[in-house]
Amino acid sequence: MPYEFLIGLRYLRAKRKSTFISIITFISTAGVALGVMALIVVLAVMTGFEEDLKDKILGTNADVVVLKSGGMIEGYGALMERLKKVPGVTGVTPFIYSQVMLSTGSNVSGVVLRGIDPLTDARVTNLKKSLVEGGLADLEPGAGSPAEKPGIILGKELAKNLHLNRGDLVNVVSPLGNMTPFGMIPKMKQFRIAGIFNTGMFEYDSTLAYVGLKQAQSFLSMGDAVTGIQLKVEDVYKSDEIATQINQGFGYDYFARDWMRMNKNILFALKTEKMVMFIILTLIVLVAAFGIASTLFMVVMEKTKDIAILKSMGATGMSIMKIFVLEGLIIGVAGTIIGVLSGLLVALNLETIVGFIQKVTGFELFSRDVYYLDHFPSQVVPGDVILISLTAVLISFLATLYPSWQGSRLPPAEALRYE
Image (cartoon, rainbow, N blue to C red):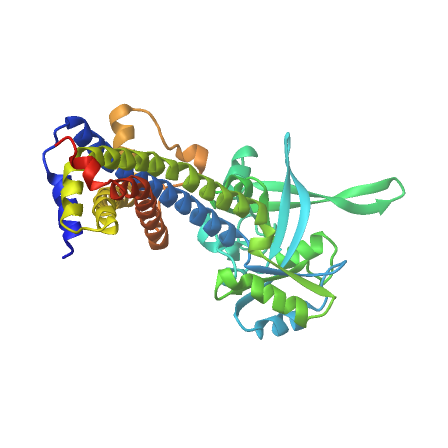
């Protein structure tokens, strides 16, 4: 073991003439630990929220959507067979997209109406898993009561706003109606509430309604056409590559858009926020690094005689510098280890800790009604922990360089003159 490490460790453990140095050493270690712990916990929470949001987006929307330039897709069966052969595609289903109004007497709400194929939709989206009442098979006429009415599935918040329950009737009004001598008359059709879904995302639960594909085609007078084709892919993070492949191989008549492009703004905002939080919380470690530098400056002043004796015995300036660099690194590494362990402990048990604090204080820190989450998301990414640890150790190392360099430049004769 190098003697520089042994001397640095001995200086760190030795009793100080000044208690103030020991206090600063403790504060520096605690500062590094606190900064590392805060970084791990905050990034774990932000990653958890990000993954939860991605799951909800991908649960309601397809990984890739294929549309036709300037119109509807007719004869979509042949297109679906071509798309099934694209490498990486695991499921395809047609869909119809339109904006309509729902009316129940005095209650009216504008919604996005989606026509889906109950037989193939489950292979692409997670709508079936989001259903809290009813099933996709109930969309077909005669599947429920009254038997003559086709079914419609509403989001939980939308059904709540319109005071609707499963089995109730609702009027669907399309602004694209029939032309008569008296002008355009909106088309209206009555549907029964066949089911209610809950994705946990307010935007979807309050604005989406699903009907069967055939019913949507009939109501919107689309014949056998559809708005587009939804695709499920093997790796959601390679969906942009599959979309590019489709755009290049299917000509200018069709174009594909992946889920990351369709939700680019919100994903960019989350990534930017995570980066900014990393930078801000790193400042805690930076402040602790100033404490490490202050400790080393005072240790250098305290050990002036020792430095002179070591140099008189043949120690080089680089060896003296190594002693204090290693001493500072021990503080930084110790703080980092404590911070990582405490950060992982908190991040992996965050929901339990939040629940305990809410129970003790009576203050609701995390409202499920506001955030539409059934749990407190926290996901530890090993890469983030490694990056945080390396950053903390690097900052600690940089903080040791200048005071260590100053100590290595101390002339032996000057140090021993008044001894």
